[in-house]
Image 1 (cartoon, rainbow, N blue to C red):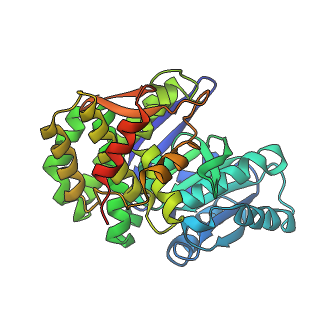
Image 2 (image 1 turned 90 degrees about the vertical axis):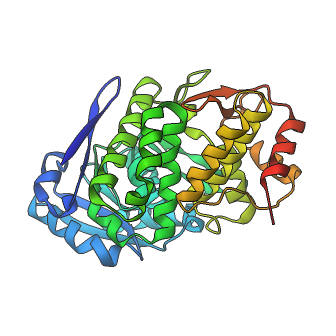
Length: 364
């Protein structure tokens, strides 16, 4: 088992990475303080892993309430959030109840937001079951739901007590979902960890083959990078750089998700296409060479990811991007690459350059 800690100003919490962890009750014992647990999952993951996680919770003396939601980004809504509240109230859950998120990023974000707001805050644990959620959304305390005008626009910062990344769950992950997770893994190399990027280039085939050692290393290194960034800027308040750098490709990517309808493009797929757009704009600013853009595109392609966005029209992209959370005082902050391995936030990109980038990187 690999163990990392997220170090925050007032406390720390562990990220545990290993095979079969959700079946090990002792992993959870120190972090379930009450006698009640509510496990939130979805219709895809629950048949695979709910029974095992329920058994682990019961072994530490907790009664379990299961809350099963439909699967998909399109269900990351107020309605799903209210389903969680309704179940918690019906079961008379109180502030000593521990919420456990068992699933991918949608389940983690919904459960975390419910934990942040139910009775003004109850403890929760992340048990991410997709690569994307294991390396990104389960770590750092961002929770929330989508709005038709923008992704993740409504939510709260609420840190988990524990993150349990059971790598055995990735063996049942469809290849499309695995590739989507690799988009976030590649991101860490591009924004701050050049040696890790080189490792990914040398080991991509092992990752796609679901090699346990390779996946464990990629998850650990990704989580280490994210934990270091979050520790320095937990609430994304840094005026330049900071936690915002984790959003490389996300402003373009969120526009794709919103424009195409939530769930039609997986988050990682949209981020991959958005990362190419960010690299292309960085090239237009004179920061990256054409060869470096090609290197980024080639690695994403090897990971099975799209490297071109859908044709929505530049004006439509810009409309959705204007609702991005990184807009400050009416100015869009983009995460771009000064060089491979060094990301920056940038406020001075002209709309005509962004539009030209979009047109160059989108194909029917």
